[in-house]
Length: 257
Image: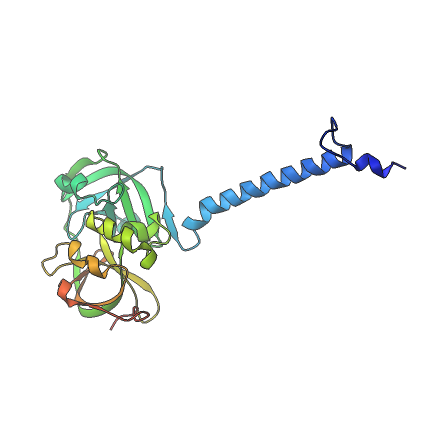
């Protein structure tokens, strides 16, 4: 039978007893494994748990048609010709993509971009200098008028909200959203319909041009906006006079009326 003192170890001894050494090695291995698992979860969970995704550092090639109004988008034909999806285009940092793509308006192009998405809502951060023209656009965007509506929700910047930042909405994100929208990132109204489904409406003025600095005072607050709703292919657009934006009390945002 071994002496219990064989397992006793103090720091000035040249080596630890075998039982102590084995226990320390096992504890260190478990600690490293735990840290690695936590690192993987932290790297992947923020972009998955609520449907947000930002493929930072991964450039993909996309093909479609550049449309500029109300905000630059890439119109991509779905597989089998089953309709057209509209991807909002943004630049690096807190900037829009108009300067990167405006000379390619109404043309078919290929470009490289980092994918940003939240469920079916998609934006592309365009790589400067990557846009290549392939020819004239085949057809104009399909625009359908849906009538006048009063929509309640929150004005957010699409780039951060769709996946770049977490959170990408609310008072905690207000300052960032204001800077992004000021820099040209598309402003959208996030709302929920009567069935509880979240919908996004790209904000434009009565003339169809994008709203930006005119709406900064309403960003990240519950609001109601009265305007004309259109569907541009797969994207909803709300045309409204900024003077038609009305603040609501906290908790009053949500739903269509």
